[in-house]
Length: 171
Length: 419
Image (cartoon, rainbow over all chains, first blue to last red; front, side, top):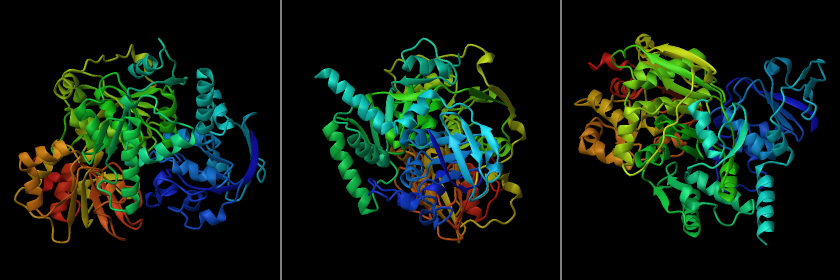
C-alpha cells in the first residue's frame, strides 16, 4: 500500500471529542454526514478544506479519549489517505485499523512535517518521505494482522467474508 | 506471564501468549450502551449479520441518553428495544445506571474475566482483577456476528502505591498526580496494574476510581490483583458465581514498575482542557465555580455521596453556584436516599438527576454555557465535553467538588471540613 498527499498538521493530545464532537452523534449516518463534522472541534472549516488523498498529521497521543469510532470513520469517509503521528490513543488506533484507515506511528514525525507538505508513504515497504524537505525514514513494522485488516478495507469486509465462509460451510 | 496475559490466553483458547501477539478472543461479556447498541446493531446488519452469535454474553444498558431528551434518541432506543427482543438479549438495564457501575454491582465483571464494551471507560471493571477494555462500534458489531474479537496482548506497567493518605486526599488525587507526572499518555496501549500496601487497604469503590482513570493515561486495561477485599466484594455481589483469579509469575513480567508515595499528595485539580495540567486545590486562588457536576462512572458511587454529604451537611451552595448530581446507579441512588445523603445535597441546593452519565454524556441536563467554570468528579475536562466549547471544566475528587460547590470557588476540602 502506498500513497501521497498533502499534510494537515495538528497538535499533541488531540482527543476524539475535538475530532468528532458529541453533538454530531447519530444512531445512523447518511453518506458523507460523518465527514462533514471531521475536526470541527478544532477547525469549523476543516470539512470544507480537506480533500480526498490528504494526510492528517498529529502530535503525541493523537486521538486519545473516548471510544467513538466516528473519529476514525469520518477521516476514512472524507477520503483521508492516512493518519500519521508519534503516538496514538489506543482506541483510535484500533478504530482506524477496523475502518481500514492506514495509521502510521513514528517517534518525532510531527517535527518533520509542516502544514501543506507533500508526504509519501509506502506501508508495504515501510517508509515515509517528506517531498518538500527530503526527510525520509523507515517505519516500524506494522503487525501483519493489522496490515491485512487495513488492506481488506476494514473489519466490516473481514466480518462479511467470514460470515459468508461459515454459511458456505453450512450449506 | 502476567495475569493479564494469562487471562487473554485463556480466552483465546491458548496455554500461553506473548506480549505484542495478536490473538482472537471470546469475551465473557460485552456491554453495549444506548449509543453503542444502536450503532453496533446497524453495523452488524450492514456486515451481513442476522442472529447475534451468543445473546447471553451481550448486556445492553441505557446510560448516556436516558431518559431520552431528543427525538432522535427516543427513536433509537425504541429500535434498540425491538432489536434486543428479536435477538433474544435478556440482560437489559435501561436507566438503571452507568454500565461501568452496574457491571461490578451485578457480578458481570469478576476476577479472571474478559470484558469488552462500547465505551472507553469499560476499563473501570478491571479493578476486580479482570481484563476490561473499550472498543469501537464496528469492533462490537463484528463480535456480535462472529463471536470473537482480535486483541493485542499488552505490556504491563505497575504502579506501587505506598505511604499514608493526607486528610482530604482520595484515589482520584492519585490518578491526577499520575497524569501530572507522566502525562495523558503515561501508559499508551499498556496494561496498568495498581499494587502496593496502599492498595491492600483500599476499598473496591476507590479501586474502581483508579482503574476508571487508566484510559485517560492511554491504557488498554487496568488491573488489581484479586485479594480479600475483592473476594468479599464478589461474595456480596455474586455469591453463587465461581471464579478463578490469575496470578503474575514474576517481576520480569512487567515492562516497568513505578513507585508512588501517596504521602506527598495534596488535594489536586486538573485545569482546563487537559488532565496533565494539575495544581493543588489550595493554591488555585479565586477560581469562580458556576456549576459542580457530580457523579459519572468515576465519581458516582456510594462513597462519593458519603464524603460529599459530610462536607455539605447543613450548608448551602454558594449563591452563584449550581450543582448537578447523577447517581452512578439506581442501587446507589436508593442507598444514598436511605442514608439521608440525597436529602443533604438537595437541601444544600443541588439538583438530582437520573442514574446515568449525566452531563458527561454531552447532551443531558446541566450543560455549560460559554465562559462557565465547572468543577467535576468525572474523569475528563476536554473542551466542550459538558456543553459549550467556551466553558472551562476542572477535574477533582468528590470531596474537592463538594467543598468547592459550597464555597463557590475552588477550595481544598480540608479548608471547610475536618476530614
